Image 1 (tube, one colour):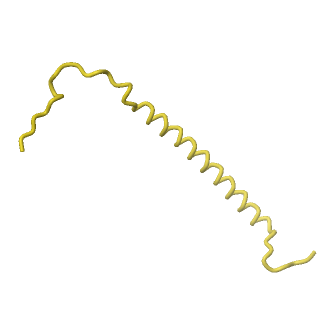
Image 2 (cartoon, one colour):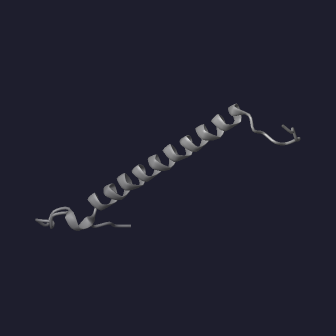
Length: 65
């Protein structure tokens, strides 16, 4: 067995990189879910879903300067 400087092959280092990969995967999945939720919110707030205005009050505002 040879030992060289700068080589990190300890089991603790391998566990750390595995935990980092798991954290990155979970973070990516959470971001995808939040993105889908944001798109659904934007689509549900569409102006096309609003009913047509009825009546005349409140649509004309007279402003004197």
